[in-house]
Image 1 (tube, rainbow, N blue to C red):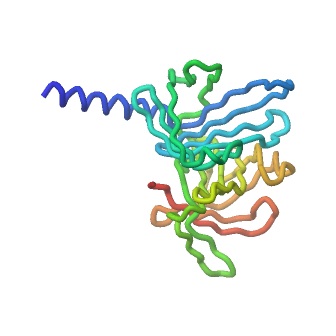
Image 2: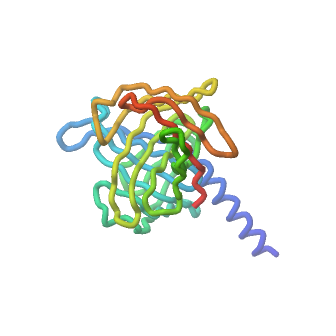
Length: 236
């Protein structure tokens, strides 16, 4: 009985610790050539993304991410994309964390992140996969279990989309920044865009609504072209 109680308590502590990491975190560093680099990490309950970009110009530098879990203070990640080293896709990575309410530190390193939010106030926190879009008036559904994915991870104030293929290890693009959800309007403020740096600084406003648990998203994309997308919560 004591052993069972201990196991239950251990599981509860691990779950509480994992929940405390959910949200967005940031760190600003200076690299070898004096460039000021911002690193933003977004953690949903099961998936995460980390991105490096120029803190002044928004120039995209790198991103990686995938699934994650926490056992005590040990974080385990299974890499799904990595722009610096695609050979890491599929690899399992572990490292130790030191976490307080508003600070997350990777043990034995100089990486210290400050909390941006804890999953609020935005209404769309979590990991999502594009599961459909309307083109020429017709809904085109997409299989979210295939290797080619377009995933969007949101905290309470930060968003990032990533297009990649876990089978070929190919990375197609990403963009992100801050967002708000007010009165059925979803607004993205772009801080980095791997495909076109000229989009940095743009604010894009869309209509959003939830239908049968899916996020319906409509408006004009960064090129001014109309879009209608459907996103489903990522379960696995």
